Length: 278
Image (cartoon, rainbow, N blue to C red):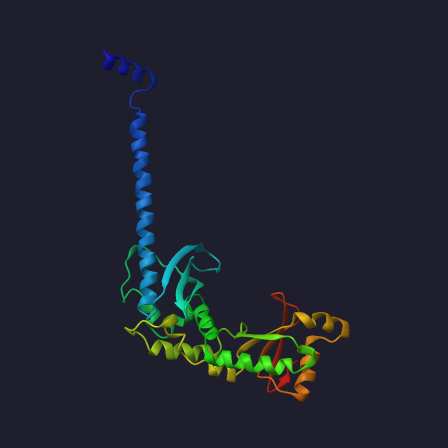
């Protein structure tokens, strides 16, 4: 009796051939589950490809995908991720980007999947900036050459009254990201892989950065909070002060900037052959 009453109610509310709510829900759930499965499948393969890419190049750190971006015109999307590793007892995290290709989504990682990247230096440097450059810059921070030069310049700069109370921070130059030194370093690195031994920062921790320093591919930040007001009061600009300094002392070639509270408060000045350029 109850079953008959329920059938009467259904006939009143549904036209002939109309599916029930249960059927619609099932179809909707099937679609949702399929999309979730597909998304998980793509994510798992992409994650495996990123980890495989760095594992095969002797990196021992962890990879965590953080999102996607589409910042390059006439190019596909990039996957944004964090490379994390413990270096000298401290965990460092380096934000990176890498091109997303369809094969990375549908195929698990194998050595052959990135064959194009293995020909020459990362296939005409397509992923050079995103996949390696931030790691190279981090490796430079730990290099003995940089630490020694920083200490030397700290001492020299503070002997000059205009810069007394300052300190120095040196990084790789942001103005020549694809200069000869980078290409040479990449060639040396590519010739050394694959390597079964996992290394700190994939080996970038151990390479020599002396060529960057010798050729002036460095950026020298003079952090001088005590002297900012003195510069303004004297009417002297940063370039003229550096010119006066170089008349009596020497500085290595490179790009220089005056900083206060994390902000650059001067123009960027280039020194070449011991003289201010321009």
